[in-house]
Length: 599
Ligand SMILES: Nc1ncnc2c1ncn2[C@@H]1O[C@H](COP(=O)(O)OP(=O)(O)O)[C@@H](O)[C@H]1O
Ligand SMILES: N[C@@H](CC(=O)OP(=O)(O)O)C(=O)O
Image 1 (spheres, rainbow, N blue to C red):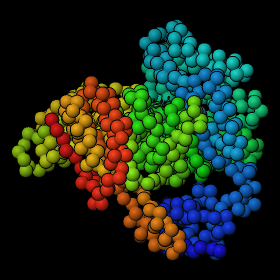
Image 2: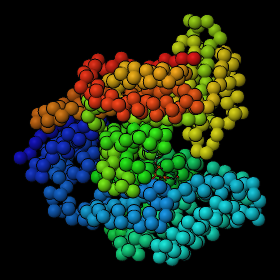
Image 3: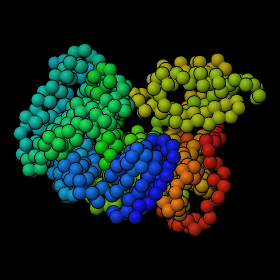
Image 4: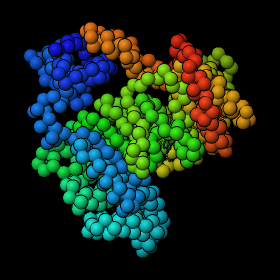
């Protein structure tokens, strides 16, 4: 029996298309076809979800479960990558870990994976340190930089222990030494050279791992991302991936598989500048972004990021060891967590996954049976209060108070003009709180990779602002971000302030933002599949779901505050205590971008 769905005028990748796609795929049965009128655009989304879509007579399409058609199954057997598995440096710190990761990959024989690897262990940090030392050590001493010795030792020892020929990396190690000598001679390390320098880490780890899989008899092929279509902006050290990347990467990986099947082992973190054609990097932790980009490019079933923790946790385990895994997150929640400083995921990495509507699973390579965290477009928020607490330290805060009287207009406009300086400097503004005569904001010096907020440039900003305002520059501040359910924001605020008051901590600034996410209540899905969809209804299901409440405190207080907040929210039965309580139906008291600020 075929079920008819009609979506006249549906825009490609529109929220409605994605919503219908999610609903349809959840209902899809092997024997059931969905006949769609004017569904050509939606078909693109569906195809990415592993559904076979064939357009009929222009407007109609038939969707079938991929496995249901023998031709599709045969095609999948030949070219159908199913998942991307990304392993970070923490999963690949030694030869033993490489063995473990190979075993892990091979323990999923039903998968046809694309593998993305970061550099081994702390190699990226060591490369950066070596580069910095090379600038001042003088050319004759460049070969003796201790970090170079550590890098050489780790990679050569790993090849020996895995029984692989040293030539897999020895050429690259020589080249690296030459590069450091060059830096020492020039006495400068530009961002462009820095990117080239750190690329050695991923280039070596992937070569070693591919050689090891081949040695085990599992055919693998190494790829440098910058050679297979990862095209980026020329923003060295923090480049953005360009759209051309998706078709280029898909074509290359599929094409090579068709010629000769072999598991692709791709360097994470790296790209090629669109104008410079030089090696670029995607910002620290950028291999996550490489993985999600490949996931979207190939329309995979799932993106897996394998870390050294049991998933995304309720807070950084280095700050508080009692952190516990969060089983489900939305893409927006994960992006928010990452953006506000949770080191576990790259801030931009959720974008391709969200665009392609591909679930991301965060797993532990040291504990492969732990369920991990599943990140999807929507989740049931009805029982959710607080999801996670994030601490970002070493933040600078600017307090700007107008010298004019209340009621004078133009103050904010003038401030905004000055703030364009931040954009030119690439310094991100995280939190803003305003009133008619004052504005407070926080600046993140670490957004620019390994670049400190330059005092001289800040002084210049203050000088400009002092033409019309009294300015206080407050350094060594921390932002504590509480990511939770927007409908519980008052409860979160009440509880958080109780905790901080008891600790005698004065909050210096509060800022709150809420994000919209797609929510498809179950009863809607059923109705919409049964009776023809009107997608206006689906759009109406976009609601404010999560809130980010940011509290600014002194750096010296940050860690203790997070521990106390974690205990209060996650350890003393608070969540289950309030779980049964009614969720306010009015969308909560603070449900859009609102802010108040203190001293
Ligand atoms: N909320 C959080 N949940 C999980 N891990 C976190 C969180 N905040 C910070 N981390 C840190 O992130 C680390 C995992 O990320 P990362 O080191 O980037 O892994 P990989 O190198 O494998 O990609 C953890 O070891 C943990 O110390
Ligand atoms: N090696 C790079 C890229 C990366 O993603 O690493 P990891 O997956 O280990 O965080 C870095 O250290 O930034």
